[in-house]
Image: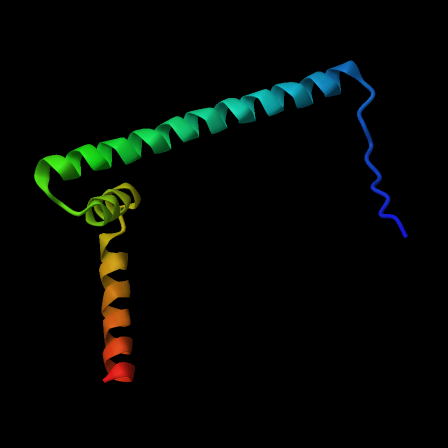
Length: 89
C-alpha cells in the first residue's frame, strides 16, 4: 500500500513566477525575523548585565509593554495565586 500524493503543478509561467516570488518574500521575512530575535536576545543580555536585572523579568516586561496587557497579566497572576493557595494549602 503506497501513499499517492496528488499535486497539481501550475503550468503557466505567471503562476510559477508568482509562487517563486511569494516563497522568496517569505524567506526574506524569515531572515529578518531571525535577525530581530537575535537582536532582542542580545539587547536583553546587554541590558541585564548593565543593570543587574534577571533576563526573565526584562523579557516579560518587554512583552507586556509590547502587548500593552499589564492588567491582564496581573489578573492572571492573581487568579493563579488564588487557585494555588486554595488548592495547595
